[in-house]
Structure formats: C-alpha cells, structure tokens
Length: 532
Image 1 (cartoon, rainbow, N blue to C red):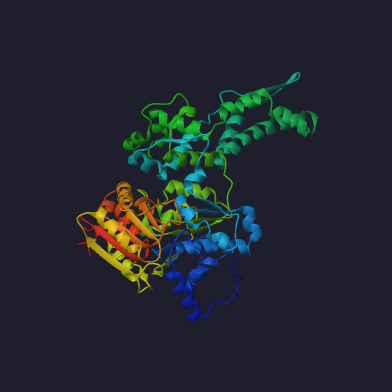
Image 2: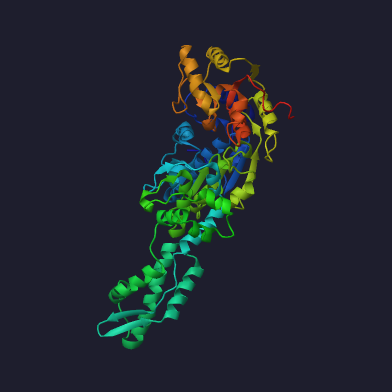
C-alpha cells in the first residue's frame, strides 16, 4: 500500500538517483512498480480527497497513468471500507493496455480492483456484436444528441389511458376516474424517475386512490389487501397499457427499423441525412434476431440507464479519456453518479472520430463539469530528442495543448529515408537487438503482417502486441497507445497519418512510445515537414 500521508519524501539527491535508475531500466513485459517515479506534482494529484474528481492532461511520458494507478492504490489504502464497499473501477482503452498495467496495483499491495474497458462494461449478453457501422452511422450514434432521441423513443410507449379503471371486489367495484389516471401519469412523467420506477409509481398511485376509497368506506386496510388490489388483473392491464414493460433491445430495434418512428423521435434533433445513416435498411423479424453493432451498445446502455439506474462505483479511473465519445462518457457518468472520477488523457493523442478537442465538454458528459484540470507537461520517460520531434507533429494538430518538454537529455533519434522500408526495418531491429531492452516495430495496421513476415524470413523472432515480455514486438499503430518500448522502429509515418481521419494524432502516439531510442524509417514524405 502507499505510504501514510505524512510519510516524508526521499531527499532530492536520493530521489533523483532512484528516478534516474528507474527510467533507465530496460522495459520488457508488463508495466512495473511505479512508486519510484512518482514526482511531487504528481503526488499532490494522487492524494486528493475521495470525493474530488480530477482531470489530468498529460503529455506523453509525464506519468499520467502512474498518477491514476497510484491514486487508485492511495484511495484503497486511505478509505478502505468506503472504496471497497462501493467498488473501484479502472477503465483502459483496450485489453492489451490492461494486460500491460495489470501487475501495478498488486505490486502496490492492492487487489480486488476491477480493470475493464468501456466496451466490456456496456456489453450485453442479449446483444452480441455481429454488425459493423459505417463511420457516418457510428458518428451519429456516439453523438450526445442521441440521448434525447432515445428518451423520446422510450417515453413514446407511455400512452394516456382510454378508460377509467374498474376493480371488482366481491359485490363491490372500486373505480378510478379517467381524469385521475391521466393526472397520475402526467405527475409521474414530470418527476422523471427511471422508466421502471415510473411504472411502479403509476401502479402504486392508482392503488392508493382505491385504498383511500376503501378506508373511507370501511376503515384501515392491511398489506395483504393492498397486494391483492395491486395484483388485480384490471390494475395490471391498466399499467401494461399506459406504461408498458419494455427492454432496451426492443426500444432500439423498433426505433432503427421504422423510419417514421425514427423521424418522430429525432424531429428537430437529427437531420434527415443523419437519420438515414443510422436507420436499418431491412428490419429484423424481431429485436431478438437483430444484428447489433458496437455503436449500438452505447445506445442500448443509454436506454438501460433510462429504464433502471445501473450499479455504480465509488471511484473510477479513466485512462486515455480523450478518445471517449459523448455517449461513452455518459455511460461512465451513470456508473459514477454517487462516486468520483480520475480522468487521464492527452488531447493531442485523440484518435477516434469523436475524440475530444477540449476537456470542459467531455467532463460535462462525464457528469463532473466542475472537475479541476491539472496539466502535466514535463516528461521523464521520453527523451528530449523524441519529444522535440513529437512537438513538430503536435503543431499540425487541431488541439489546444502546450508543447511537452523532457528532463531526459539522453536518448537517440534517427530519421532515415530508405527505398525499402521492410528491409530497413529488419536492419534496424537487428541493430537494436545488440543493446538491452524491448523493441517495438510500429506501422500502419495494414503493413504489420508484411513486416512480421520480413522479420521471420530474416530469422528474427517477433511477437504480437498481446504477447507481453517478448523482446521484439510488431504492432499496428491502432493499439500502440499507452504502451512503451526501449527502442521503437516507426515505419512509414505517412502511411500511419493517412490511414484514418485522426491519423496525424495516431502518428503522434506512435512516435512517443520510445523510452530510449527511436528509428523513423520512410520512403515517402514526412507529414510534419514544411509545417513548422
């Protein structure tokens, strides 16, 4: 566990030696114990109050992940009963990243923390992902405006009663007038409870109206009588007609499969083109046979939250938060309604089509608009030469992020124009293997199979990104975020930058994975040249 709050820090000279030694250790395998690298400005963030939410804007190598993991351990140590009772969740960008950090909390003496991804948290056994959206459709589904569309679609199922309610009991019939039933439904809707809670409130208030009649007629009634009236067939029929039971899959399938229903729910919210992008061309026979996409899961989670509030956590650490969509952020907010957040990210590393360009908007979607934003700009993991190159790429990105700086004066950067990047990559890896440490070969996703084949043909064994501990790893740019290697061979930056809409940001991520040495191999122009 972390030290008690009053534990004195190491003397500066000793702390500096520890830090230097930790930084220079070769990096092979999972992320290691990070206690030795925590610095004073980071420690202030680690030791914030449990109820406080904080956002850390951290440039590459500034230790933002270390801050988040240490904060998790600190909260577990300082508030053990409160945190363990409410639960602590760490959300990472992908499972590869989670495997990379998996050993850190146990090394700090803390276990029992759930480590997951947003995709895993919102996964539904009743809605396996079997379809893929176009980018246009995914953009709309991840947009915060969909929350209003879904609320409308759900509450479209609530209908005003057509008749008064009559409940026979023996020779007498209890009655609830039509105008009273209408008032009950209007009042419950105005209260905006979760849909399932609202349904039970409608039932309870209709029964309460009958109870008052019964007590005026014959005195107090007992619980058994109330339960009998509540379960009476006419009461259940009224509730089912006015406020029907439903499930998220049923609501969403009905919405996306019916252009008229979608148009009604999206009126004034989505354009006709956006409605067409997300609508299903062919309706499934039922919601049970629907082919759901990954983006549909955020919509189903939103609906599930409207129907019934999910269980929450006492604290959630969200790493690489800049990549969250507004709808993903809302999914996290529902799970932190009574808890706090540690939000970690770097706007310059946003690579999803909906990546945040500023923190206030994202923090509002996360339900923590007042969270303080703390910048970390001084890095000690990425060498100065590599940071300098990354800052040139940063200048081409449309984000308001200050340039990073590094305390590291060591490290090596080599930029080489070659005719055959595959052969050059083999040579670069062979040279890297003469020195200590891990080697990461990073390229555009489509180019990684060929690079791995070239290494195999040259007699160099390599592994994929999920095989932690390998000496040489070949990985696509899309999964490089959060990982680090002693020596990185970045292959054809132009191909990485043009592979996706936020490709330049992806390139920024790739270049900053190097802890000691970076080789940049290119046969085409460099994306950052001529833009200084």
